[in-house]
Image (cartoon, rainbow, N blue to C red):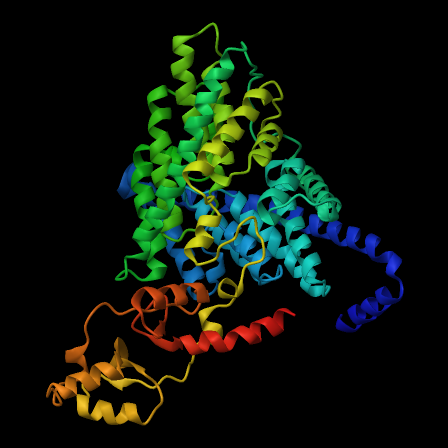
Length: 577
């Protein structure tokens, strides 16, 4: 295989005219692959849903009754937690931030195994009742497939990024039967720009993937809705209000989602692989009364669109789904946030539509019309992508009659969300990791390089029981100013030579290092970017920070200093050139 590829690359160098045809074929292959994987992913979700809920009902209802649903999401969470934390950490979360990071920071390179691991973990998470969507996983899976094809063919970094975008477009196109929306999604959100240089390839991939999806899943819109239309021109004023509310809801969604993620991250006593199980247990408890929160939720959305749900339930689900999704994602589940965003938009629009239609029954459309437009509004706000929101909602519903209010609501929501909060639901994840990605422009040195790439792994440590006089003698044997302090092999602090010397001058020579350790220990993780290290050093006014394991902060992996960062800069510049 390698010999054949080498011969092909040599042939291409001699015949430049075939490059365009070659890339078109590659894009079509990417579309073919993403279409097939989207069909497989779709069927796997239903397989695990039938297996866990159907089998679980037969197994558990005998002694648990209707409360059996509590254990199903917990069991799925446990299985996902084990897979993610012991075999494939890149499969955690909603996926799209990983794709954006690969485009901006890794020349489009993604681990090939993500295609299999994300397919498995996300289908289990969603199939077991996690309040998650399928778009984030399919984008990461499909982008991973595009990246794998690019790596196999040894494409340039720019073409690798284009192929990742081709995969993302194909995944969206096949999953939602939205070929144009897939193209817009890839350009506006994944690449962060509309460029004609890659447009053709992305279109080919999206169309090919959509054809494969139609062959196996049929040619139907994602949602079947009545033919709603704008009843009166004055109704546009009400849609302006809905756009404003959708922007507020989008920001609330982002804040609540990451608030729960922080809470679960702070549960240090709970092992990482058990957190998805805990989240599943909480979602299961919610699902006893509100089973609508389980899974993607398309059935509930369609019932709101055709006005067949009670208004009190619609209003309740607006907040209950927000909590359930935040728990599912925050605890470490593997699934997307796009479909839950559509769910929230439908509930918000349905509630608002019920109010205005009750007040002005002859001058407004039914509540379902507002639910439809609200879906696009919340999506546009949480992603700050009004063009993609307009096109995708049009394709997903096939309803052109509400395109005018849809355009207004998406634009207003995006403006409101951007004014209140600068980050999208995807870039917020990257910002918290220290990556400042503004429309995916290339990140700088401090964001591009990880702590683990430059840290010193050979660390001189001091035992906590060591006396200060003995510690001073050991310190003088090395040229370091700071030393990690360990107790029974576990990190307990860091000590500075000047602090030890000051204590000795005060006559505390018999004291131990453990006795003089004060203040909160500042640590960092190996997968953090250097930006985080620099910020922590500046805030604490220190020159060294211990590098610890993310799941066990008492496990010392190395140490990073200001000099390590300075030495790495010319190396990274040379590599980039």
